Length: 251
Ligand SMILES: Nc1ncnc2c1ncn2[C@@H]1O[C@H](COP(=O)(O)OP(=O)(O)OP(=O)(O)O)[C@@H](O)[C@H]1O
Ligand SMILES: [Mg+2]
Image (tube, rainbow, N blue to C red):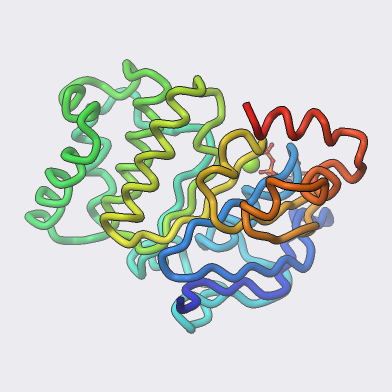
């Protein structure tokens, strides 16, 4: 597989506080990678840095072999990088349809966008049912589907998804992930996903990065990490939580 995204030795600071330190990631075309890490580890900061929302204080980021540090989010979206931020921010007073079309200005092709929307609705039948309702009335799971669909309206090749399972019931989390897997299968989409807990993500991801206190503590295949104590050690910084972790992974 060819490398699509290369993050090399990136640090990001908010004022004097360094939130991410010397992080390197290598994301192959068509792969699914997950960054797991506790609250405040720096997961969102890394995705923001890749999507152009914040400029690293140090390091390089390359997309398709081109350096992208310093480029603006709109520009990166037009090049194929789209971020689904944490928190499911829909426009509550706009309809589902309007929420989707808001994103289409990046594409500048009205007819093409309407066509994209129609194809997306085939993948998201729940959104078709809700098409003319205001987004504020949707359930949490439906809103998560909507923000993912909205991000797809810019025709990304790399989709960055920040904590898609946060606050959703387990069954809905599985639905969201099934959808993400389908997007990879059908469109060859490359996925980089953040999650705070390990729950379920190890089932879906190929490569897992464990981030703690701004640094990558461990990288491995999900399969490898499901076994042994390396993952819980890296995540918690000690072996004492291992039992809690395996319980979570197996549930
Ligand atoms: N806009 C900001 N200004 C100042 N500090 C920030 C800002 N955003 C994040 N931080 C700090 O940077 C560190 C990393 O935050 P970040 O949001 O990237 O972590 P996270 O892993 O996404 O956490 P969570 O799981 O809670 O979403 C934290 O200490 C956080 O308080
Ligand atoms: Mg976050």
